[in-house]
Length: 116
Image 1 (cartoon, rainbow, N blue to C red):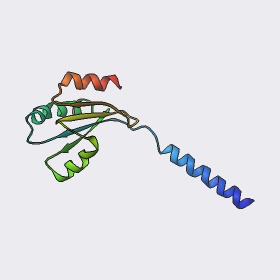
Image 2 (image 1 turned 180 degrees about the vertical axis):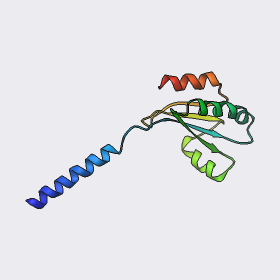
Image 3 (image 1 turned 30 degrees about the vertical axis):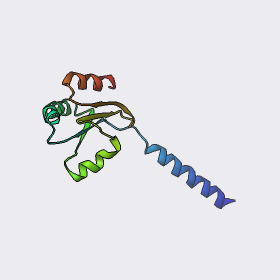
Image 4 (image 1 turned 180 degrees about the horizontal axis):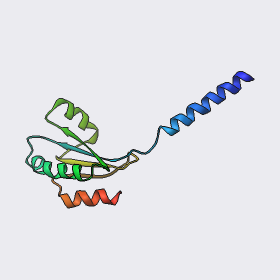
């Protein structure tokens, strides 16, 4: 009986640790899928750089360059038919916006502020 009690206690402790590790992220996430040879991608780079600096406390930016083997592999799950692609995830890891093609600064700011 004592072994059963200890076993159940261990299971409860393990379950509570697993739940504690599923906390919200500190920041939102923007994934940009681009190509260094794409004109629209190159034009958008300074805009994304500015947004990354301006919202550094609330946003992480990850970039995948399709011209590199690593970037190409990491971008596969996002099924990009057109580039650049901007995919936003909230602090819970849920995708809340996806945009293909050139994007302007004001739209990026509006998207971010809508989730703050």
